[in-house]
Amino acid sequence: MHPKLLFWIPAALRLLLLVVAAVVVGTFFGLVPGLLLALAGILAIAIVQLQYLHALSDWLDDPEKTRLPDGWGAWTGIFARLYRLRRDDDNNRKELSEWLTRFRQAMHLLPDGVVIMDDVLFLEWCNPAAERHLGLSLERDSGMRVTNLIRNPAFIDYIILGRYDEPLTLALRDRKLIVQIIPFENRRQILVTHDATASEQIEILRRDFIANASHELRTPLTVINGFLEIATSQPDLDPATRAAHLKLMSEQGRRMQNLVEDMLSLTRLESVDHPPRPEPVDMAALLDQILHESEALSAGRHKISLVVDGPDIKGAADELRSAFSNLASNAVRYTPDGGSIQLAWRDSAAGPRFVVTDTGIGIRPENIARLTERFYRVDKGRSRETRGTGLGLAIVKHVLIRHGATLTIESLPEHGSTFTANFPRSVVCMKEPLAV
Ligand code: ADP
Image 1 (cartoon, rainbow, N blue to C red):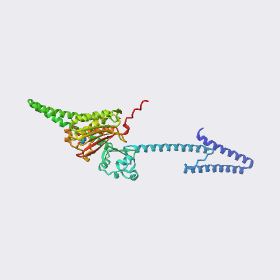
Image 2: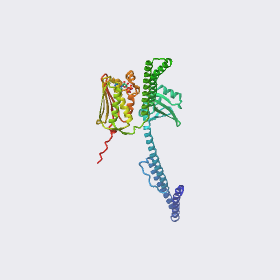
Image 3: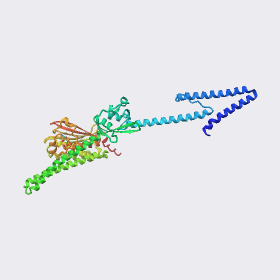
């Protein structure tokens, strides 16, 4: 039935009943008692309605605490509808507050900063990333003008010019930020900030790498080209000079080859994000190979020893061979003739270690932290003389990172150095259980 009918029918019935009762009383007892009955009935109905209105007003004042009464007559329908409205409202409110919580959590996790401002740039809200990027504090700065909080001339110009379709790159608090203002709604604007410091550093590293690599390749190329020009302009060069030139050219050619190979290794190590697929590595065999290579490089100029007293590990054998070979060959190259070099594979409570100790030229403490940077050399002349590329320790660092290991360097100038590759216990190969 239509709700309007539900409202009117009981009221009409009540009135009809009252009129009938008044007519009956009027007929039997006279006009005055009939009218009095009608008046009393109307008064009773009015009092009941007033009571319900009062209860409704109480409930409207404090819907949380007061209970809606169970209605009577048309009030039943009204109260039922109010109940439903209240329930729907509660549900909507719960849903909205859940959404708001989720939105806040997302904004907290967002690496980019978000600042909400009104049309005249007064701060209304910002997320923690924006607080970090711009040095704001929502609690302290809420309601303040953003241009008073971020006092950067480039930012102020950006606001004055109002060219918001282009982002602005800003150097702020040792960071490089990309900021952009996006107007939204009628009277609000969002300021979005992105921290580009890391990508800027990567870009600088990339530029440096290309500049260094070009420089490193240019020197041997210049030497080779020089000799080739001599060979073409002086065809009747005596055989001894020609042989000496060819020897120098092939040395420079090898230098370029070493450099390109190291650059390729480094690029390979850097471009593969995931750690190497772990395969058991026979450490005794691998280290034996390193010992032979070192002896060949030393050509009897040093005393080289090897101790293998550690477990086999899981890792990429090729990468480990390259890293260990770099450490061992550095020890040979930076140790004057007659010095001694110890290679040791040992176990410890924390995990196995590869330790290379030499009695070489050593490194001053201020240079140690930079040794693993690409192309960093303490003594450029000595590195080149011994066919160094300046990339060896960068390769070592990358291989170790990919195996969860770290490199520690201890050194005393003029006395020697100890390079230690510290592996975690997790890479140790478990012994096969004995067959019963
Ligand atoms: P390079 O090809 O020049 O040897 P590396 O990356 O292997 O490049 O090493 C970087 C620098 O660290 C070297 O140029 C050298 O100055 C220093 N270095 C490395 N190993 C030793 C060592 N065992 N003793 C002294 N200096 C070393």
